[in-house]
Image (cartoon, rainbow, N blue to C red; front, side):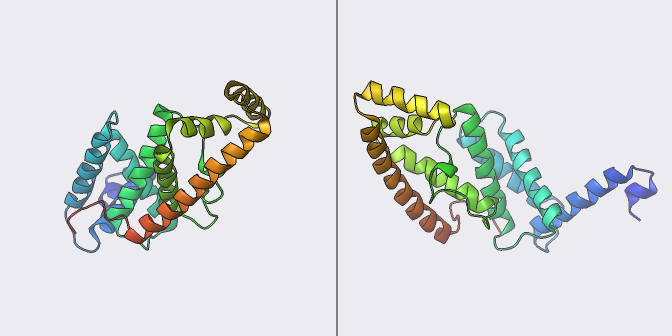
Length: 211
């Protein structure tokens, strides 16, 4: 029985402490750092959010690490990627959510067949696909980017009405608008596919933490 239990701490609290201890051990990869590894990764993640001009970068770093800890607790193990890199991938996912809340996007992964999450993909792969979509959108010229964002904005009836108004503003028929949007979408699909393959092969090497 642990010290917390002997001291009469609530069982739930003891379980949280045990889960956090296992999280620290996972981060350390067998070498006990006395919590220094956690602090170093937290500092790196906070710096990452700071470079992205996020408000409260420390809080976002906390959120990213909390998500990783919950995933570890739920799954029992996280394999296929070094702990530091996995934390970074989840941090990118947190940033994308933050970015969408700060500056709403109207095109999601579900709108692009080759950009949409696959059934067997984990959060890391989904985050990478979303990041690739954001990158590819930024490569479009402003007119095409605004067109495709507006074209896929809204739900069902709202989307149809928006497309009618968009066609009216552009002075084209709905069919012509559909063809133009399809061409832009094809470009995005190809860009996302290329980006995803390249970035996945690179193994997220842009994040450096001393091993």
